[in-house]
Length: 438
Image 1 (cartoon, one colour):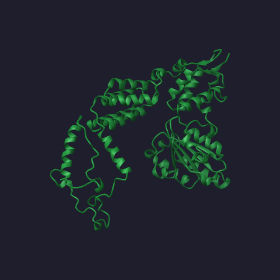
Image 2 (tube, helix red, strand yellow):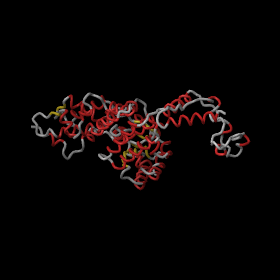
Image 3 (cartoon, one colour):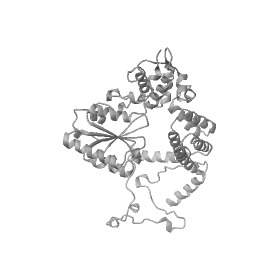
Image 4 (cartoon, helix red, strand yellow):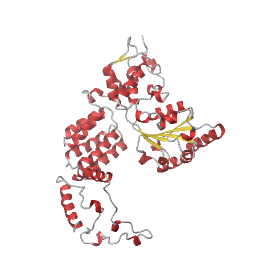
């Protein structure tokens, strides 16, 4: 009789035990691990310290940010220090920097500082990292699930290389699950895994390796006492206490469901949109991901046909962050129904895409002289601002004057529809354009 449960109780979690000990074992992220890439160079023990560059790893949970940092530390032979932005303060950062300086000066040993969830650091805490990074006392590897452009201070961004991690593909996740089943660090071949159960784990994970391994470990523990322990799809669903198979019974994956969700909103089918929302919630989808998609939908598919849609979507996102789940399902549902049933227009979306296409094609030209900044010394001598008409001085508030560069004069980017509030906007835009052109 095999006592499977004894394998899991009181031990380090399976996801931690299965972390690669070298970059060669890392699943996925092939775009970051090509020969000669910065991460590979950083892991090279023969590489000179001067060649090391600090990096910020940005990606969804479970894509291997911590795994990469620890694999680099083990491979490079450098001293490795790990801090969490949740618990560390400015004092902790300064102590690490001082010790790293001492190690370099006394023993010639460089230090890798891995900082998890750097987006949780305040500006003052991030400022404390700058001397060590700038002077090479440490090689910083920072991890974040939030966009670094908004969560990391500019001086730190400019001194680091930003690398984006991608959700793991099905093949990568399947390989991870297989390895965990047979590897001595994992289940050691003591438990059999059905093909359907393997597929269910991959679908459940939605690109998150930690989620897949955690579900595998929970299911394996439930086979305790069986003569021939076997993990089935039903056992997976029972172990994670979620309707995994209802989410993906027909083989549609994470991105297929969110795609159907957005297209149902765009198609004004509130019932279908709510159905797909329920499937994602029941599958344990990150509610922040759903909220972000609602915000995008409000701006892309509804736009100025109903400007309030964006406000409602943003409010739902804020509400989810404030109250959490499961109550967060309620504002998500409210926003979903509102977006699905209101008027639609993608005119603003099309406008910015057309303008960007022109700019990329070289269609921009010089800013007209009368619109240029005339406040700095010598600007007026260059003619800047000359002939500019201040619209507030006119009764109608719109002046007959050119705003686009000469090369784009008469170009129309925004083409309003006749739906919802945009019908009124369209009439107003037409009047404004007639005045502008005289």
